[in-house]
Amino acid sequence: MDSIASARSVTAPSPLLPTADSVTFWGAARTVTGSMHLVKIGDYRILLDCGVHTGNDRPAITPRLPFRADKLDAVVLSHNHTDHVGRIHELYVEGYAGPIYCTYAARDLLEAQLLNSARIQEQEFATRNAVSLQGTAHRLSTALARKVVDHCVTLDYQEQVEILPGVGLTLYDAGHILGSSMPVLAFRQGIRERTLAFTGDIGRSGLPYLNPAQALPPCDFAICESTYGGRRHETREQMAEKLRRIFDDTIERGGKILMPAFSLGRTQAVLHHIRRWMNERALPALPIYVDSPMGRVFSSIYKGYPEALAVPEPKAPEVDWLYEPEEAYQASVSHGPAVIIASGGMLEGGKILKHLRNHIDDPRSSLVLVSFQAPGTLGEKILEKSPKVTFHGRTWNKWIEVHEVSGFSGHGDHQDLCKAMEPMREKNGKIRLVHGEPEAMTPLAKSLQGMGLEAGIPDVGETWKLEA
Image (tube, rainbow, N blue to C red; front, side, top):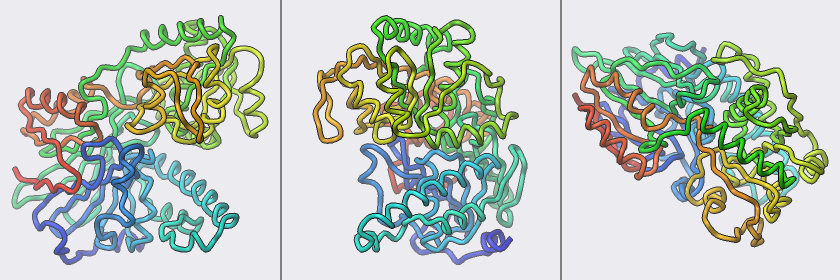
């Protein structure tokens, strides 16, 4: 296809970029979101992810991308969470015309994400003051969404391809969400072949749902996530017992159990395990409502990839998907206990906020946070030991019981991350930690150094020279 031919053309070095093989960290540096890493190999420029920032990371967003998109030769997508893919359409607005390498499932998810975002933005443009939106250079249209998807080049896991002359790419299953991958680039430095691994987000162990992360090969260099550095996840048994206590107490009070969850990945995982635990009688049976339009779309895509599941989906209990606002309201205020899973994992938006308005001051109900709460988000604020919380322009009595069950995380914990980097020891590999707060990066760096590995923590905009 034309996009591949374009990506394989040799471009002149840009004076704005270093001339040696290197990685420049344009996002997720000392923060958890905004994954964006620019790899330079010879005269080629390869972008790993193109994500947005959330929470306190938002000021780091620039009006334009911090590099010349038209100078890129290839883009590699690790997975479809917004903090890894949310700005990918901007590449084509700013002149990129090459391929996006990803898995088949990632391409399907990307199509659903972009077309949904385009539909919403087109509706806003049609109903709001169009004059005020004229300067929105990166507004996503259906035509632009389809252009991006058409440039996706899909790969199987562990399929080795040459994406540029002398540059190979292999994707390994990350076990994080459907279609997630850990890209490994192979290239030559003089007479020696070098390899650079990017973990994307590594899935956790001990909570079987998706296939586990595949082992990375020994590599010379690695960019490793660190979200849960220094922490251990609860075991499956601990999670079930913790939820049982929450369920029992809430049922006794006659309240609702609200569970905010990201539409992609977390909604599917939470549904899977709650239904399994109800089948196993580890949890009491309750009606399960899901208020997440895109969660429903993503779940249908999951069903198209049964080979990605380590264990089959339970057939019961049934899930009641809420389609209309009135349905969601009636489920929220109906008599009797129930589980309501709704979009908006950090409470920054999504359907969960309407349910939270109904129950924030209801001491019978429980709010169960099952996702990482980034600094500055409402989710982080609601975890604070304070009697009130402000959102939607109002201060509310926080009488709902708030719980955190971190084990549902799709991220590996400290032990998982160290295990993922174990093969690096064979080549005395060098590591740079990204996608984490400093308090998570520091203990992970110390553990990796204790394994005999060089592990550094880059700043945003810092360039790492890939030198042996």
